[in-house]
Image (tube, rainbow, N blue to C red):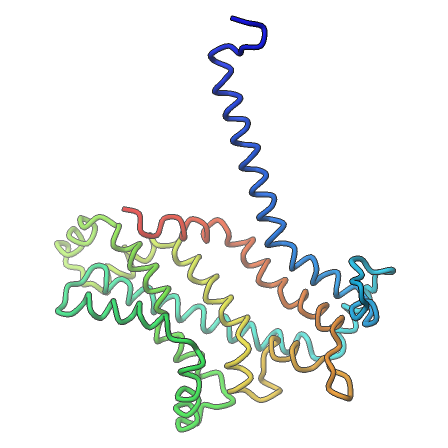
Length: 287
């Protein structure tokens, strides 16, 4: 063995260390890519309007304007709009998670003519843009007298969501058939099987679905803007439409500060439920 050669056992270790170094470098780069916009949003909320409009770009504020967050909070009924958003998001997320679980259970465990065709149509409906159904949806709720109420979110929740149905269908399809066969022998119906056997075992997908649905509703701007009055509107609408000058020009630094506070609840929910969320997304489809 020459002085420059490596022992046979050290070569794999060096290779593992190089692979880890490359992996960590890629992960750090991806983390910066995803966290960067949020960091820029925070910095924008700490600048003056002149610094935001400056050219070339001022990467850091000359003096941190912490009062922007207090001004953004006090300029509108921030807690009131946040409460409206929370009520709508909780109603929709709870109902759509349960209804999607029920539909996914049906597609996974029940046999019926045309089941595959219906499931294909359901998955295909995910390709429809929201704008296509916007006008018919508004006309239906207007005819039913549900404009300026929270009933549309109740019905949307009861109607299930195609993507969440897909998640539950994949998860329930992976559970052993012996579970429901034993329950049927004991005299249980499919309703009992779903509520007492399958649903309790699907907590990872339940957690992931709830977080996804909550995020959808919390971040929705179009539906609240279209269906709700100012008093019942959500924080998303208030953040985008309230922080303007008398001439209608957006006050960008206050919008950025309000947007940071607007995102915080979603981050907290994800941090609390991240274990179930990751488990749900990783186990879906595995048998």
